[in-house]
Picture 1 (cartoon, rainbow, N blue to C red):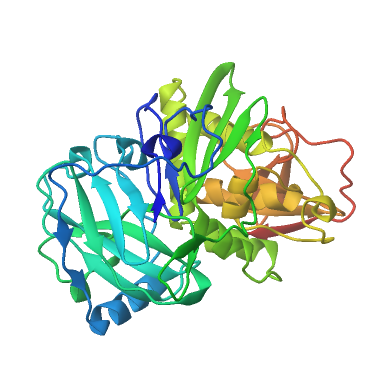
Picture 2: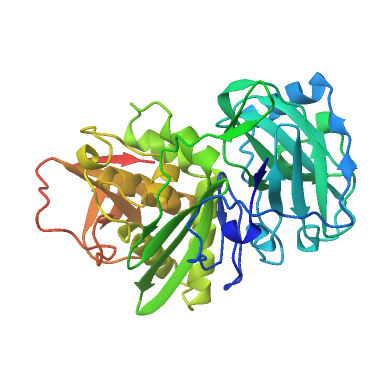
Length: 408
C-alpha cells in the first residue's frame, strides 16, 4: 500500500481562477516548500463515513473505456464555473494498493451535480484500461474505498480518478462526462499483489530559480512561473500530469515545426494556456489584444534558453509544449512552438519565420515595429528567446538574406 499526505501535492489557494486541460491544470497555489516531493510514509486513517464500493468487473466497460480514452483528450476537463481549482480542493488519491484505492472527494467539486467516482487502472502512460471501479452517487465530502482488480504487471500501470455523471452508464460515457481529478505515480504489481513505485522518471528533481519553480508531486509536476508585463508583476501556477508529459516525451520526432504547433493549436492544453494568459491579464488590468499578446510573449521568454545538444543530446529535437512546460527550458524551436500554439489558440493570425539557424513568430494585428510581408499581410516579428523583446523588436544579429514564412 502506498500512502500519501494530501499536503504533499496541494497547498492553499492564493489566487482565484482555474481552467483545466489536456494533461495540465491551473493551480493558483504556492508550493509547500517544506515538502521534498517524495511520498511520505505516515499513515492516513479513513473517516467514519468511508465505505467500500462494488467494482465494475465486466470487460465490456474496460474495452469501452480503452476506446474512449484512446479517442478523447481526457484531461481536457478540469475547471469550475466558480473559478475554484479542482486540484486545490484536497480531492484525489489518499492511498492505493493492487486491489483497492482510497480517495477523497470534497463538496466544492460537486457543484450541485449528481456525480460518482470512477477509478481506472491503466497501462502507463495513457495506455489501455486494465480494470475499473465506479462508486455510488456522491452526497457530500467523504472518503471512499473502491475495490479494483489487477494482476502481476512487468510494465508500469497507474490509477486515474474521474468524477462522472451518476445517471450515465459507463458504456455510455462521452468525453465531456469525464471530469479528471487526479492520478497516481506509475507502479508495478508483483505475483504477491505487492506494488512498487516505478522510479524511472524522466524528470524527478525539483527546480527553483528567481522566476519559476517545479516540484515533483504525486501524479505529476507543480510549476509556478512569474514575470512582468507593462510594468505589472504577475504569476500563475499549473499542474501537469506525469502521464501527459511522458506520453509526449516518448513520442516520435520528425515532424515539421508547423506540424507541432498545428497539433497543439485548439487542443486542450493550448486552450488552457490561452485562458491562463487571459485570466492573468485581466487580474493585472490588461485588456487590449496587443498587451495580452505581450504577456504571452513575456511568459515564453521567461523560460531559459538551452541548446538541444545540451538539453537532449540531439542536434535538433523539437518539443511538444507539454515537454517545454515541465522541463522549463528549450531552444528557439521549442519556444516558437509554444508561443505560436498559444497565440493561435487565442485566435490570432500567426506564422513561423525561419532564418538561417533561427526561428521566431510573426503575428498579424494592431502592432508596431518590424514586420514581414507575407500573402498581402504584415506579420510583426516576435523574438521568443531571451527576456525583454517586445512585439515588433527585431534582433540586429539576424540575417534577412534567406527568410521562410509558414502559416500555422
